[in-house]
Amino acid sequence: MKRTAGSSDAAALSGAEPSAHGGIQSLDSALALLQILAAMSRPASVSELARAGAMTTSKAHRYLASFINAGLVMQRHRSGRYELGKGALDLGLAAMARDNLINRAADRLEDIVDATGAAALVAIWGPHGPTVVRWERTASFVVTPLALGTVMPVLNSATGRVFLAFGPQRMVWSLAEAQLARARELKLSWPDLEPTVESARALVERVRTSGYSSVDGRFIPGLKAISAPILNWQGEAEAVLTITTGDEGLLEQNGPALDLLIATCRELSALAPQ
Image (cartoon, rainbow, N blue to C red; front, top):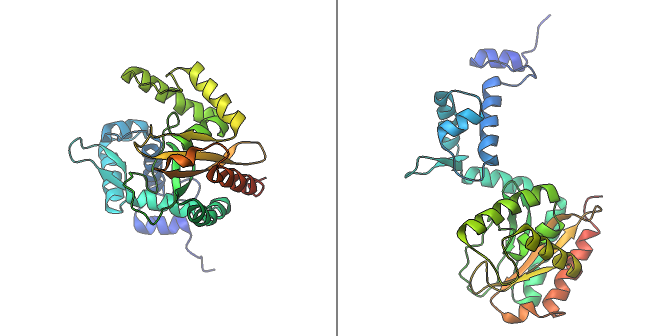
């Protein structure tokens, strides 16, 4: 009987060793190394990655070279450390683009921009915190570092503060405590927040009571922002919708922009995963 070549045969023909679950062992190891790099909050050296991946430095270096060739990883010229490249960002955004809730929220951005004259964005909780996955700009030119893939701080951005109040608490507070420690180290504080857990928890209560968060330029000088959560059935934020502009009127209590934001998030929350 003629036997059809399976994954083990293909691996043998290519010189790769098959893994126990039918994949290619070397590819499994390489992808595990990529996941380790993705989980790190800063660029890492090849020796750090090799230790975390329980492999030799030479093997880790070969894997990283292949990832660089594919655009998934980039190497900093001065330090020699490695971080995710544009190809990895493109893959992540492509996966996020297939999420129905994000698509529904993104479909509302243009209406918000037209109604308010402000820019609007959608953020989700990513590996390193609140991450911008959709962004609708205004026709007027505004200089801003915000872009797809931007990771927002949880302490002093409107988007981050909503995640701090409504996001998955174990993950959110792990990041918040690290940022609080960094703020204490740098002697940072804000008009409504001291770099302590007690002050951050008081902020959370204020945001949960009001149902939204606003900041007046302390994240990006000159830009104001208001954010509200898109909640799932557990009351956790699946995503956060943010409106941002340089116009002071955006921050008006019960203003048209805030009313539109909250109404839109409530409507989208009803469509969130059950």
